[in-house]
Length: 405
Image 1 (cartoon, one colour):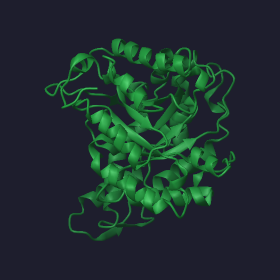
Image 2 (cartoon, helix red, strand yellow; image 1 turned 30 degrees about the vertical axis):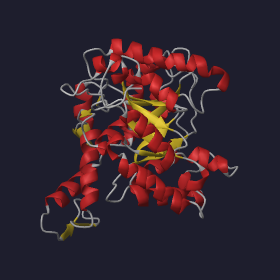
Image 3 (cartoon, rainbow, N blue to C red; image 1 turned 135 degrees about the vertical axis):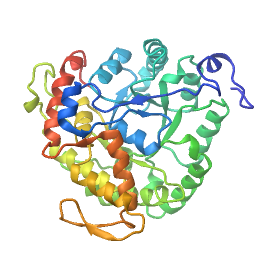
């Protein structure tokens, strides 16, 4: 470990204060033909860079897929996901990797960093790739790799204020300018227990404030929190249907997403999918998306709750989230009108179905315009399902080598 902020060894090769690293250059639906983009979008998704706002980055990450680090062809699988139009992945060294496979999985991660740094040499990575670590030692081992700039950051499981302080301090000791970012996961029982939650959130918020520049977002770990109470969501249920999970998520958002922290929170992982036997031959209209209505409802509730991005476990899920992410034309017009109202007031919405009030809807308008930049604005009459079918068809060639997660 290097103290005093000096850069030595491989980190010096990867980074300097005079040449900030662009850790990602993301564009949703960038794999579609230009003519298709123009037909579907009134405003096409823009490129979002790592120096953009955290909300823009999270919007551009869309459906963020978990990938077990133990997969035998990890680098090839990540590249296939990128070719499918998926813009963010979390390579998982924690719960998805059995203890007996941890050694080979750690080697896979180091190989992934080296191989992607060669593959993407001289270009900005088209994916935001995070590593979900078990402990500080996994983060440190990654930081020693010369190609560390291909990692967007680290996901910190089972994180509280104390654990965040440990990771953030260790990361700061490397003194990396524009370095990898942290995403702590709130998923331990004290954040759900009514008698413990207030103190746990207060301590966590204090650590977030201290390390605000190193944290991209807070993740909500519904699977672990449910497991702590011996429960598991059924296939037709979401976090919002389980009272103690909804309460824990609501309190988390109310504490960390409001000023002065204004820290974004991401949507919890959606576990259920019905994968077709052969993604390369199944028609897009029958891709086995039996969970679409459940996942779609959850994405809409996430948005209404002020959440950004969504964790998934299957490529089809990621494309569903991405297809549901563009802004509707009417919302885009409302957001522009609200943002342009400098002196307050109220007016009818674009479709004349609701009231736009400039002051209370101002933050909504700003968030909607951020999402429009990153996710695009669909043309009037274009439905999300049309974008999804085109996206699934475009993804089929790249999905040929992927096996079941």
